[in-house]
Length: 258
Image (tube, rainbow, N blue to C red; front, side, top):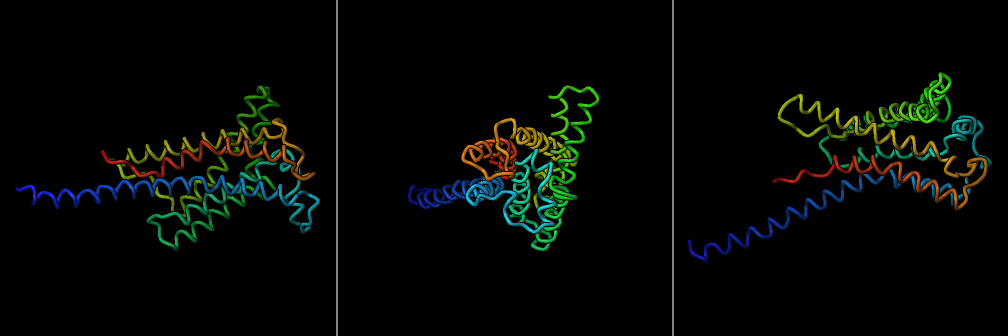
């Protein structure tokens, strides 16, 4: 074949090869956007509370105030923003590109949102999530377990229940399962590994945000947030969410061909 015949083939292959990495980069940016959306939403809610001066003296319906304010909000105030994280995680899955049909996204997403809200707010703020954590930790401590270990056990119980609700909600909303593998056992292994990694990431997050008062976070919602509270809460929420954010982004990134 002559050089003149080879030239069109070579020049035609160049743009095609250039388009593939560009498309891959766009997919990676989309993965990061989906993974970061819950944390950005939680931080946005935090800034909104700061800017509006919202606290328990703000006007709210009596029934809502009775359900919202209480021991668990006073002891674990940053769980309010963790709840925003969990809800937006499911919403991000609902709108993310994927093979799931629209009906499954809507119905499954609504079921997932109701599940997270129910476990986090029934019968009052904190729901079964914080009650499971507090009951596990306090029970272990009263039985002679060292405080640090008892607190870690309580954080694990709360993270397990919250992660189960959020993960199941995301799956119902259309989150893809493990990538196809050579065997059913390998797919099961990948799913189990992903579940364990997700639980460990949320365990770390629960343990960190539970230390807000010890880290110097003020008495919100008994008084409005000040600038110092805002900085402490933003740093804690970001550090707590980062492992889970990176895990979600890694799952969504396209696999590179050899």
